[in-house]
Image 1 (cartoon, rainbow, N blue to C red):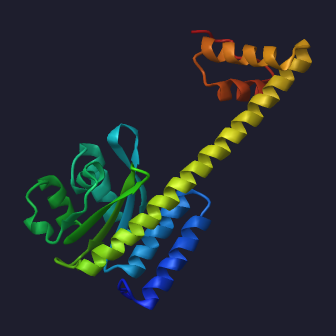
Image 2: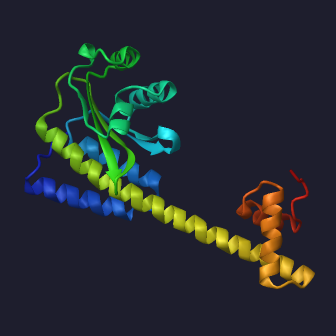
Image 3: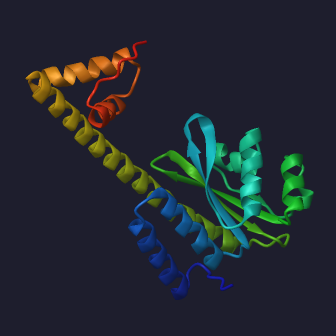
Amino acid sequence: MTTFHPGTAHAADTFARLAMELYDAPTVNETVEAVVQFALQAANCTHAGVALAVRGGRAEIAAVTDPAVHSLYQLQIEHGAGPLFAALTGRTVVNIPDVSAEKRWPQWRARASAVGICSVLHVPMAARSQAIGVLSLYNRRPHAFTVDDEAIAHILARHASVAVASARHDQSMAQAVDARKLVGQAMGILMERFDLDGDRAFAILKRYSQDTNTKLRDVAQHLVDTRALPTHRQ
């Protein structure tokens, strides 16, 4: 594996290529997958992963390069504790140079040792003061990560944070556009069938949404698919 050091021309080219690939990735999944693959090239790690922040202070597994990472992530998500959550909620780097000497999370330490992980580096990802997730680097040797490796991880995390935030925004915008189109189709059906104007057709969709405790988009989808409004009332 080639190791890149900050400040070198090779590193600059590598991170420029990373930025291009991340911002060209159309989805969050493809974005984080690109991040972990670059981490394997640019940092002194044998495995890498990204966990993304979700509502309620929770985390979800977004990308891993090895089942060992998935196992460690899953254990921490199940218990709501571990170095992943320390980095996520504290927004601070968690560097564990020797897993065998770690005392704070005994269950996590046992699992990490069992899957052969000896060094861990968690770097928080954030954009516009919002927690995005955590980039995790792992090595099968103790004391594997240097100051340069941590600097590289910070660069990767910054690129990943902006790219993930951008991809999430794009997906949300696309979903909003799709929802508007769907509602427009449903309104058109009601307007044609009952000779209504747009305001009245929208009011009917909104009332059915409230009465059935169903999202407006789902009411519209039901009408478009079945040509009938929902009949179940709360």
